[in-house]
Length: 133
Image 1 (tube, one colour):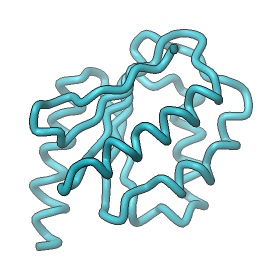
Image 2: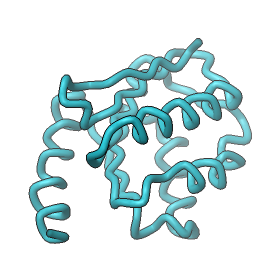
Image 3: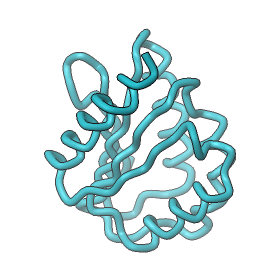
C-alpha cells in the first residue's frame, strides 16, 4: 500500500499518514476508514499529520473524496497538517474547505517538516482547545 498510517506518538494523540509515490483513490478511501477506526479507539482528541515528502503527485479525481472525508470527521475540532504537500493538493484542500460543511470542524495547515507539523499541532491545542474548556 502506498499510504502508511500509524500513531505518531505513544500517547495516541496524533495519527501520521505517509504518502508514497503512486497512491490511489482506493487507498485513500481505505485510509479514511482506518483513520476513523483509530480515532474512535481512544477517548481523547486526535489530530493528523499527512506527510507528502515522498509523493509529489496525487491521483486524478481527488476532489471526489470530499464527502467521504466529511463523513469520517470526528465530532470535535481537529487539525490536520500536511507536510510538503504538492501545490495541487493545497489548492484542492483549500477549495474543498471553502465550500465544505466541515469548515468549523477541521483546520488544515501546511508545514515543511514533521517537526514543524508537530509544533503547529502543539500550538493549536494550546490555543483552540484551551479556549473550548
